[in-house]
Image (cartoon, rainbow, N blue to C red; front, side):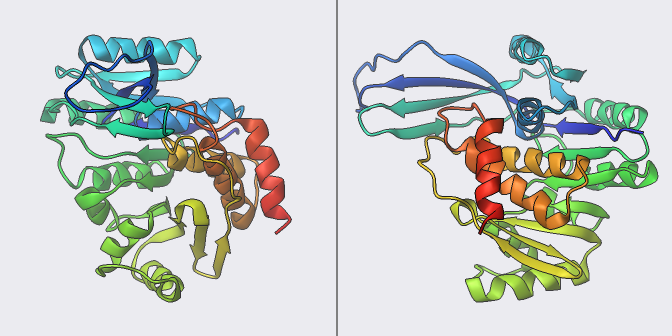
Length: 311
């Protein structure tokens, strides 16, 4: 039976992107007409999967006119959705690119308050829609009102339904979640520092700390995102540093989510853990080659993957 991918986004967003020729204070800035993209961790993973030729069920909380706009944006790109309605309005963020410097300024706002009955409904819907062998990807921060141990509750459902749980989050929600069984965890270097109780991690400390984390937690695969330096893959019996190709970066929005999408494609195609993470790094790198929130392009990702394989 074909394994399915279900993405979960608790704090989705509409990303509004504009550009302007020069940014200066106390003056009216003439921006280009905005473009709108659906955003938020799991939604970005679903969008990237679509661009890589794979399907997913995109589950998320949404409310108000912005929530309806979000649903319409995803409809246009033909992504299967399961929307859990909330009273609060879905947030919208702004990214401004200064065309005179090619620098991008990103303005984020908090998400809406989520009531207990709303997140409990989400758990019920999650339980109803997961099937044995599925990949469940939870990506992004928790919005206001949700308990810090929410991903622990999600992990319990995944374990009971025999689903592969993949997590990409941060803060207290990440710390709480690591008490649970996780198939694959994707922290960045700062998040791994927090998990290991240290202020920073040097290059020499990274591999020992990754091994220590796996020994102390029920986590099958640890993939530490290192940005332009690639990623570290760690399992109980494998440690491998995977370099990222050097490219001209135009935007880093969604690069981590594109990386997760690439790794999921690798899992679906039966690649080894090493090949799976290499394709993920290729997809994450490919996402940085495009402006705004375009995410990865399959042709770019495939070419970069071949470069990584040749290293």
